[in-house]
Length: 287
Image (tube, rainbow, N blue to C red; front, top):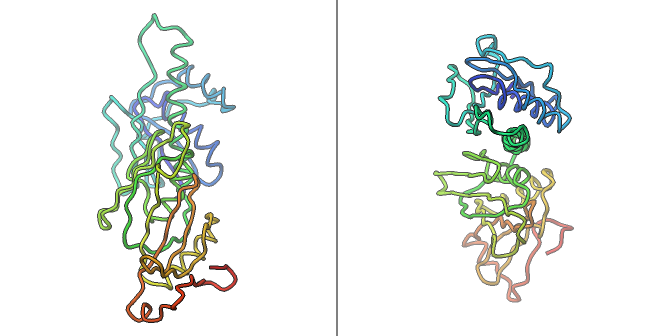
């Protein structure tokens, strides 16, 4: 992915703030541009609220989408909420972030109150771009056959990156409050929900189970997790007590446990030791 277009109607506030935030947060990883279908002027409140983050929009001007070479755009992100969103034709990845328009015609509203509306929109956009940045360069992930869980998290962007890598899919949607992953082929529905500062403990997620095909894929998952710099709670091993499994335990960025496992074959079960001692699957990592 090389170029992202933030698109709204007037290109005066939300898409302008998104452009400035994306440049700050994504750096030279992505080229960003914003435009509108009925361009106006950049809002002074947008300029002021962005200046609080050290982002200068004073030199920006509203642009018509007609001035953009859309054939060079890899992703279009629309930011309309109540309005009818612009439609861009062509083959391009599309995301929709419905951010409430902070502009107001209420002449009785104070400068401080209007500015606060812009800050709210700015911070919601910023949180979404942080997640976008976490998803842009996912490496190879473990193969998977089944998942199911629901989780509360402290760092939504870090957790979205971790689970997008693990599940091999971007969230279906995300806001500044949650991210939802859906894999109908695996009967999967995972919701990451911001924890609101409440203590995270075993009741927020007992653990996520990720089934893979066999012992070799558990070992492969270990090496992929190490390359990804995931936290490895327990390296690959074969356990015999309870349900015999080849398993690997990870911790996600919020400390939740993730078990990647494969069921033993009939031939493997026949090799069960009498003492049922756990066996390491990778030399030097311990049981």
